[in-house]
Amino acid sequence: MSIELVKYTENSRTSVEDNYLVEQLVVKNEEALVCLIDRYGPQVCGLCESILNDQLDAQSVMSDVFLELWNRPENFDPHRGSLKTYLMLMARSRSLDSLRSRKIRRKRECNGAFGTSEDAPAATTDASPIHLSVKTESCEKVTESLLALSQCQQDTLRLAFFSGLSHRQVAAQLEMPLGTVKTHIRKGLLRLKQMLSEFREAGEIQ
Image 1 (cartoon, rainbow, N blue to C red):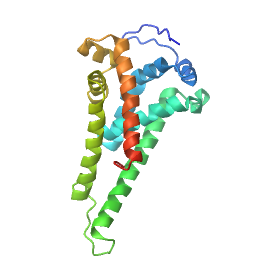
Image 2: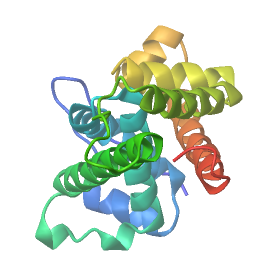
Image 3: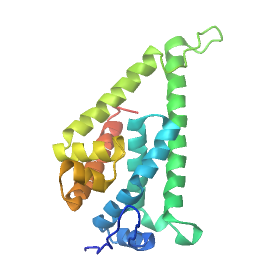
Image 4: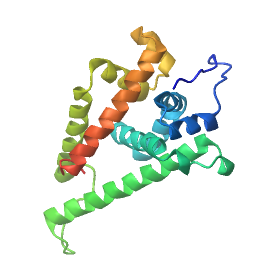
């Protein structure tokens, strides 16, 4: 099923209503998801990064947010607020959950290394060898997942989310059609999420 989008410029943006796009997610219209990622992805990722202070963790949480929207679009109630508000609240909640989980893991790692006695040295900083080891392992798996994507998917994802470019700017920089860029980003995000989930299930990352 195809969505006919109204053309827009950066200064005067006119687009299909969010509610209609969410309705299209119910019938699994992938183009609707691409439109919503294009519209709100950079803002969601920016909020996640401001909370987590980590690009890779922010990227993972952002993927979770849009995957949740894709899997359960019926959870969005337009009568309770805008889709943007819904996505940003979800991003904030999941980022805070991720932050709390990170702190709990860090505390357990330190307790496991130094014991839990009152005389044990306080090793709760980001610079502790254990934390750096776990952090490095997680980053390596994320990097490994990114490198497993096609070159086009890698290029579009890095420009869209790590460099903060809009999909139109990515298309211009890579000299690709806008629709092709959106397809690469959508498929790259879904594949990246799948691979990271497989690593977590295998216990290779937390």
